[in-house]
Image (tube, rainbow, N blue to C red):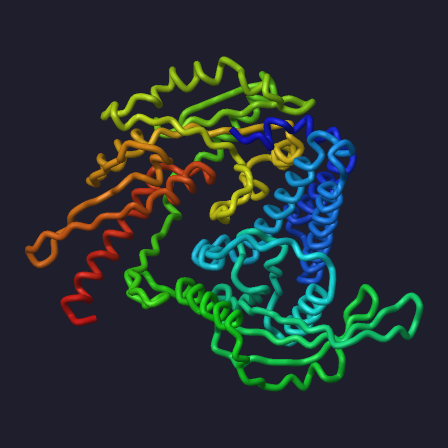
Length: 474
């Protein structure tokens, strides 16, 4: 179970942590309000969020540097909890800016976690070039450093044209050229910036000036010139990753593309008709506010429970016997094939991990804002129980075959789903072990099992297309 949520009260014991959480809440309220007064307001939000994350990271560095005897119990974990929530708030901005489009977001997450950069020449140069290119009509600059889910490239420019969103992701390099102190209260930095774009544009190099806390464009900026690609292995790897991400973003349903030297068959499906259970979660939260605990099952496949304590949910609250009673009485543990029964408990939201969380951040949940901030401050804790055996029952009811190998690991990621389709009188089989992500999305986005069915139907359609292309020599 998520220890970050369970120890909400302990973490709030640090005044420094409480201040950081309140700063996160203020920024989250602004983002959720939706009234930004144009792109300038949202840009200001982003810069403030970057500064907040840098402040938290600085506090973490200081806490780690203290001697063992001077450390306050729970303080470091509280700071790390605040940092993670600040990054998920950045993910929320990314999801909103990119139109909740998973096909734009997921390909940019296929990389290692990116550490928070302290303010310096690199971040100043990145902000300067972002402002300049935005003013040149590139669109709103979404800074990857404020997110956890955008790990390829440094900035994605988003521009709406009435037919959807146009995006362009760039990698920015900065080189500190020099500084001159013309005024005791003002420092001027000349920063040389080059960027790589996966969109096929030539690289550019130019200079910009940063004065104190503000940005001003140097005359040389407007004269940006083409530069030859540098023979640098690191840049080559980054360019390769960006090109792969772009190929995934632009892939059409049932199309075959060569990505990273492999032929990949893409399945894109419309999930707009899938069932949603936000109303159920809102009902559970309301009841938990009155009774301290509430739980309910959805589709006999997922059980959601909420714990509420205005002083902070603790381990004693999480041991409420009504939870076990509710799970057992729901019938969730009993699938058609008893050997496949396996209960998994997932905290909502989950703790930080090395992999990017490719589902809706909890700041964007369709629940009251009060509940969102109670989660942030550890006063509300939500868990989900799933039984992959029950999910398998539903899939088999829709004509698929499901095998869940026994052994260690998560059943949702071990499950193998297969099926048949006919083409010109010949029978073909397709098989996938890639439904773990869809099950996880069901849990954290309160979706129904038909979300998984729709995904598998999309895979099957792509398989049919793959057979047709293969026969036609495509």
